[in-house]
Length: 126
Image (cartoon, rainbow, N blue to C red; front, side):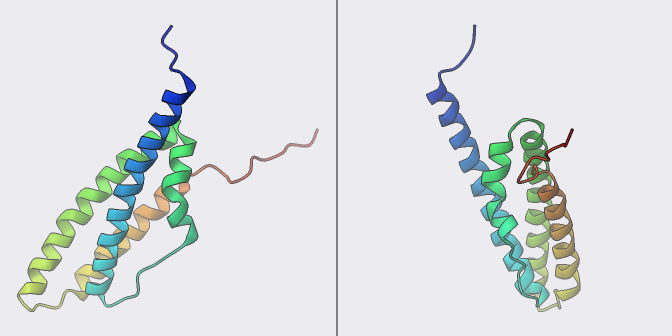
């Protein structure tokens, strides 16, 4: 039998939640820089703040899919932000490109938030 003690399972979940939270916070910070380059206000929502803890608690396929989507979004923002900063350094207007990158980020965030389970389970009447 390979069952882990509850304390190990809880520790593993806490470490996983911490890793997701760090990645999520880095993405949100990068999006704030993109927002500044786009000349817009960064979006904020309670659902976005709660995402790391809720997706870690959901576990299973939702967590696995979120981790994959976070990796993709990290790659998009990392390269997009590097390009924007390079263009900005040359004095070129970054607003159109930054707005497009920001739209991609917001679309991806919507998809990630859709992975969260409902806050309450539906109750079916007999």
